Length: 421
Image (cartoon, rainbow, N blue to C red; front, side, top):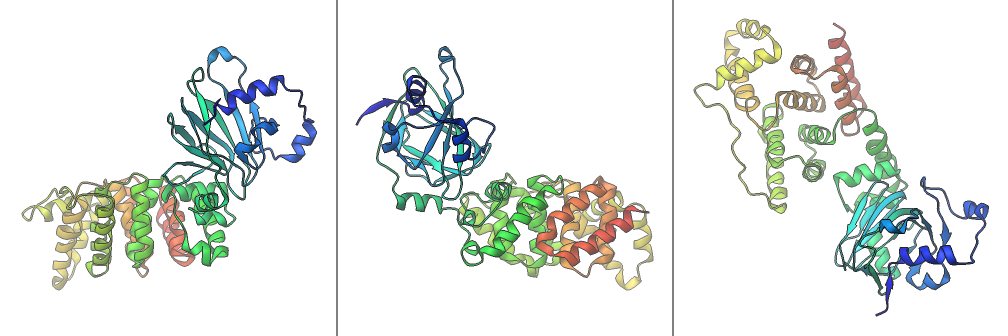
């Protein structure tokens, strides 16, 4: 096979020595401006056998003594290069549009602005634009003094279609932000709903994974755990399983996932939660997570009521004593259970801090419905442990796509009522 210097290195020499001149105004009309970097010129015909479609290249560095050539490479929709490898490796940085990178034997990877690909030496791969989008990336040649490029066979239409179809959700008209946020939760996910109900997916995903996420400053781990709690409260097992995988993808620990589950028993009952526990165990086994997890309990039967009561007072104040005292005699055992079981058995566990636990309880309560009194009580509890009005509104906003407008508006009314006192 013919060995060449890496395409970006060879082409830089050709561009500077060639007599090919392309009118700048014509270039602006022919190619969109999808990044802050210049688009450059078309590759010479000499290199067209190695590309399917039109490609443009702009050298960005001039000092060859630095031994680090950097180029902006722009592909028209559907354009990609052949399979190839570099003896010295390569770095790609996506800067505009939507594209793909695929190493031999691996799934194609969606590339959006800000994504970085570090390609090791002699790894066979290809990269290019998505079928429906222009794409630009910076190509950084590593080990440039000795780096050689070997061109291999083309990426045929069938290979390309299969690779770029790995994420069917991208066949609907989604914003780059929606795609990126969705990919963060579920990399390489193939959406069945995008095939059967593309209009709904376009409406929902642009809203839930772009606009709604931007409307509050809630980090992705917290958002994901609260949605998990909400789906448990609603009995929404299918959506819950999606978010368990999402949680693991964004760095929520197995212990944190289990603590969300365990605490939900106190608020929605084990009859509803047991199926979620079984489903979680299956997912964790698929991820190679050994079960059971390490113990998180900090109380035992002899001190659980006292520890739970102490935590209740820390969260809700001294009114807890009055509530217990005024409870009817035939309901005193419920007050005991609240202290010993709800708080003593669950809230005292490690794995989640108190602010997260109160926020989780709030998320489950507003998702259950018919719990207005408890919602108000736990809004105050959240404020007492350090979750402010902004945080409560932010979480409520993030749950809106999953609980709907009536539950959301009721929760916001309660927040307004409690925080205005």
